[in-house]
Length: 225
Image 1 (cartoon, rainbow, N blue to C red):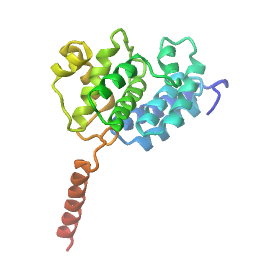
Image 2 (cartoon, rainbow, N blue to C red; image 1 turned 90 degrees about the vertical axis):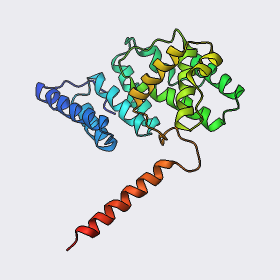
Image 3 (cartoon, rainbow, N blue to C red; image 1 turned 30 degrees about the vertical axis):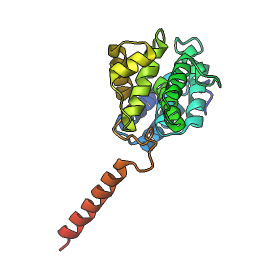
Image 4 (cartoon, helix red, strand yellow; image 1 turned 45 degrees about the horizontal axis):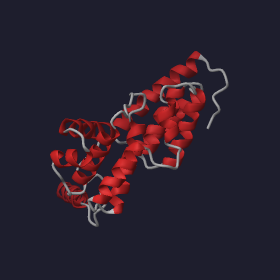
């Protein structure tokens, strides 16, 4: 990546801002490859702006390109070393578990959740901390986040447990579970059977995709003269 030390012109910064706006719109619309292309263009045009690297990190993470996402995040930290986000983002490079992951792993294991679903919950937590960008993240109640991650992964994988049950297992309130669950869903745009976190052998979404494809083919045949 560009090292972000050269001077930029007003025209370059304007071009970068426009590319960034297009990229973020594409990101919200789940056109992730196109979003990454625009955000890379923004960073190239204005390599001194840390937000371009942060936005690129978010898009790369959503695309499952986690090594590239961490490299972009490293560029953000280099340009903004005193950011209030530094501690949160530096933690993403650590090998050990944080307090949320420790509570999550211990509790999910104690209730016989399969390892791949525990991994999906940890994956979700990694992505969430990137996806919220500059939004502050409070970790004063790590078990609340752990409970919400557990609850959300269970819903995605059809292993639902009531919020009251999760709240009891983690020693938090039902309101906390619901609040953090909604924050996860909103930031990560989680859908039922989400491919990122669904660990069953057959994902019901596959059948929907097949049905939609078949309908397109039938409609195309019907409209041919």
